[in-house]
Length: 310
Ligand code: NAD
Image (tube, rainbow, N blue to C red; front, side, top):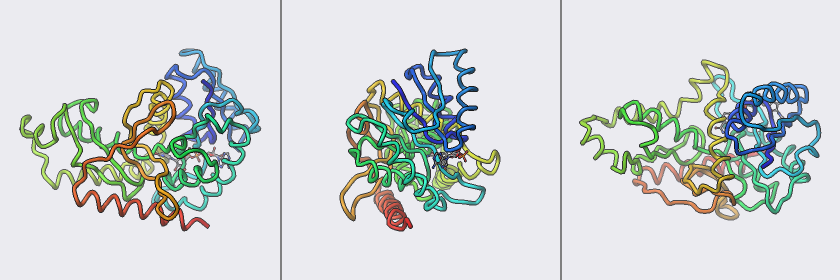
């Protein structure tokens, strides 16, 4: 299994680190417009790999080097500076994606390749990537709200004193400020959240839930304020997604992919079944009326941003 990563900044490096530790990939190719940076990362990661799984890591200076890739991960582009939203990156990163995708497509097998999009604003970049690549929608997969869902599970786990692994909780919609916490579908150890709280005598009133939503929405801002960028969480999310695809696990992940046609075409995250063909099905979540309207609002923001690309 050969994968290529385009854009070897904080995120691309963290993705490469996490992926090499999975043992499911035999070759990782790194490309960045800054060739020196990519080569240095390949050296460093190669040294690290000698302590773990056998994986060949190389940097290339031309897109020809990504030939034969099964999966291409796009993590190139500007990141948020403190105070910036993801949507503030729209035109800068639309230009980056428009530069990269045609070059990627000239060097991969369009019949089988899958593209994982990480660059923000995530959902709009998924739409643009799908349009430029002309790949089937299910093979252009944005990490979407995988990270937001992980943040939600982590915060809930602390409140409920139960492992994140026993919590099924999804954030859906835009990977951005309009994302929606899908409280109606939260399930802990097979029980609805309220039932679990009753049994465990845990109080989770509306004020606490609102604080949790606020913390999920602000997690990236807080991390960027404290360490300049976010990388470990997304690195782990991409490697989890990659494992799910490569092993054909058919797990349900909140990833983003394009749905609909013409004016109704949009990419947002929903619980989707992911396997070796990419996104193979979408699970319609249980939604309250507020959640439904928040999801519609979120989709509109993504679509409006896509229409607003200069
Ligand atoms: P960074 O500035 O550290 O790295 C970006 C890299 O992209 C640089 O090395 C740069 O040289 C390269 N690059 C830029 N334009 C390029 C081009 N046209 N061709 C090839 N390489 C190019 O930024 P980062 O912190 O690694 O973030 C990268 C992206 O990931 C940002 O858009 C950021 O917002 C996004 N991100 C997404 C998530 C998520 O959950 N989806 C999480 C964190 C970051």
